[in-house]
Amino acid sequence: MAEQEEQDRRIGISKIYIKDFSFESPRGPEVFTSGEWSPKTNLNLRSAHAPAPGDMHEVILTITVEAKHDDKTLFLIELQQAGLFQIAGYNEQEFEAIVGSFCPATLFPYARESIANIVSKGGFPEFVLQPINFDVLYAESRKQAAAQKAANLSGEGSLN
Image (cartoon, rainbow, N blue to C red):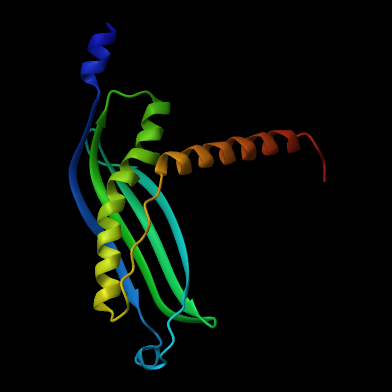
């Protein structure tokens, strides 16, 4: 019986695509003539998923990168790298780990390449996002969700 369950499990990549992509360089051409290049970079990422027809699921990795110098934005990137994944035969906990870790990790190299290319085409020096361990991020998000749930449950009986 366990062998049958193993055979019914499937993860497949049907399509990887850019759902939305924005690049802004509000300080151009000033930014290219100032001579100094020591930006502070902020990175924000999140993922979401939505069911699609059949056993397909759309997973979207959203990455926002903002480079600033002296509190002035040099460039701002917002990217939604998406994928259509076939996922079947997994229990709820396994499914959540797949869409919360495996799928975003699969999408990340594509997003990293798109971001590096647009920064270069925007006239800026090479920008390479470092690898990200999505397993650790997923585990952290589960811990935070559990802590939030515990806090909400402990606060339900009290009057404020």
